[in-house]
Image (cartoon, rainbow over all chains, first blue to last red):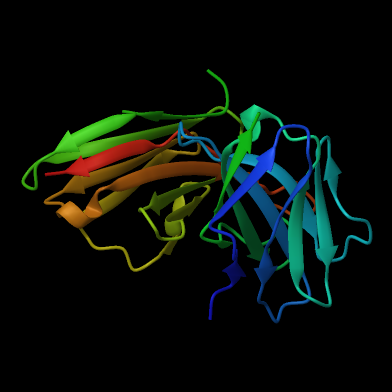
Length: 118
Length: 115
């Protein structure tokens, strides 16, 4: 079974509007971390936001927020006030185990291509 | 230089060539990774190095040979590759340890084309 599922291959949003990118995950671990990365056409993966499984508050970083619903195993990324520069591929990823204790085992979804139009 | 750098950015090679990809991290991290990103497939973890020791080899064919001479440098040596090995190869680094922030920082990638 896939560890990370992103069901939206592509999303379109108008500039200045908010957009939600979906992510569901599958794990039996109690401790895990969820990450969102942005990949522009240049190829570099840019870290956006992190949510730990024990964090009670939803993570926020500037215009990015993570809508964490633990019971539903979903970790949707919300981008507020979209900008043209937000057009990119967005990947959801999960690390199982305690923060900093496990190496490298990031499971990535297939990504969502976001296009922001003027 | 800052962050994670990779060279070359683009590489075209024949199936009989030998080449190497280089990654350097300037973040003081203690773990480094190689990923393969093919079209229409999720990012695939290839190798993990912690403190210069390989701790994970994700069933990668032997035509890919990693090398980590120190905690800042990571190489991927390539020989007798196949056309299906054409992909974007991404290097990443992170700081591992209890209580630290452990997100992985990625380089810009090497776009490899095997003819």
